[in-house]
Image (cartoon, rainbow, N blue to C red; front, side, top):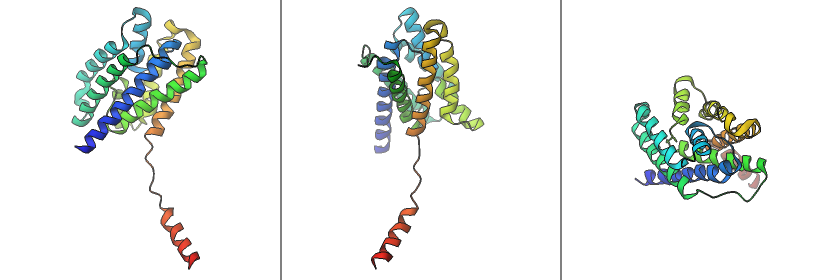
Length: 208
């Protein structure tokens, strides 16, 4: 029970970081995104539809289609992640970064988005959408989740070219690469430091 509580806290932190990255760094600077969020951003630019509601509806629809491909824990964690992400998209709506430097916003936005997704994946959840596809590519083809996600997201982001233009699309692709690296960093599993006992033993001998 304690473990589940900690996992849900990580999911909440991840969902908040993901939403903050979108609202504070992506939308104010007319950038695109990948996956379902990328689609919701395009719909926001064109039709002014709320990213929070659109993301919730599309992700839940995809989850309903692919829930059998996830285990019970992953499904429940994904539902929590999608719901919290949509909630935080509403909470952080209108927030924006203080910097007007586009590259800074690309880097920090990508880092926040990647860290948020990484935290959710780390505890066994997904953000639905292309993350589910990426996990399947990892399971059946052995692809790293972060790189499979980058490919899927880049394809979706490319479709935003007609809305945001070539320059903003190139910045978007840089942001996706930063997000991919952030996902990798968050999901690094530290190796057991086997050298520590030997160092301690050597020091003991020197002291003797």
